[in-house]
Length: 373
Ligand SMILES: NC(=O)c1ccc[n+]([C@@H]2O[C@H](COP(=O)([O-])OP(=O)(O)OC[C@H]3O[C@@H](n4cnc5c(N)ncnc54)[C@H](O)[C@@H]3O)[C@@H](O)[C@H]2O)c1
Image (cartoon, protein in one colour):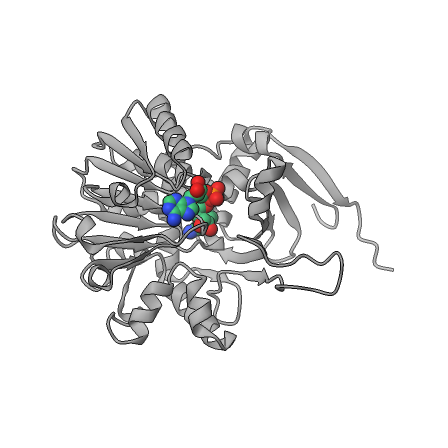
């Protein structure tokens, strides 16, 4: 115990061994997290306690030879937070993202996560967080599928066939056992076909790939959207059938007639209020809106065509039984998730506890006693 500080290092193989890919368990932990969010037992960054995180924004050009400049999907971000309940812990996810990583055989983003004692700040665990972050990003629409989608949903569409949607699919399918066929849509047909083959090989469900946007949305009962920003993605009102549930984890826009007629459920409305505050503070609200998932909704709220955020529904309210998600079988619902540090903290903590119980990971020493001069 103190003043000696030891902490656990969990590599990617350690994280896998400790259960980071257990999608059903992750959905359950994310549901618990939504409940705490709804009750307010959490803190995220900034004075408003609801900031998504802090980004290093790279300049378009620089006079310094080594300074990074802006590029597709290029940023560094820190996402700190505290989560209460049985977690009662602080944490920070820190990552760099760069589309050009792919040419080096790397994922688009490389992530690490730190868990810290809430009182002392002492590190408890440093963990490889690519799979952790993807799993919790999937767990969130998994909870939404449980609470918002029709239980008799048969056709699922995957829009954007990258690793994040793989995690979304893995989580959603744990909640929707009635799914009989899957359409996989990507800008690149080979990626779509590869995803479809993975669906069939791993889940035994009939699946096919397409590079046609309309085919990616039409006739689906549930649609999971997690495409990158390689090309703007938009869908039409008439493509979306009655009763459909659209689970949005990446950027997408739609006809105004859809957005103003669908039932909208946000992951957490105070998070979106914080995004709008940041947009105003940036001095260029339009530009800011274009870079965030909620942008198309914020524009309609500003123009009075959608209810204000504080009058809207968050998934935590639905999980806690305080607001209704789906009212009728024919409601068309769109769920918007922007990613919150509290989910990295809860799922990271759960996996860490499992690792400790099973003796997984490497013990590292920070100091025997702190050198205080
Ligand atoms: N909400 C969250 O918590 C959260 C967390 C992590 C990532 N994300 C977002 O999820 C998205 C996917 O992440 P990833 O790591 O899988 O990215 P990725 O780049 O590895 O894969 C995304 C896929 O989307 C496809 N794509 C791009 N534009 C498209 C379009 N217009 N139509 C169809 N397909 C298109 C690409 O070809 C690629 O196959 C990103 O936008 C990312 O920012 C969200």
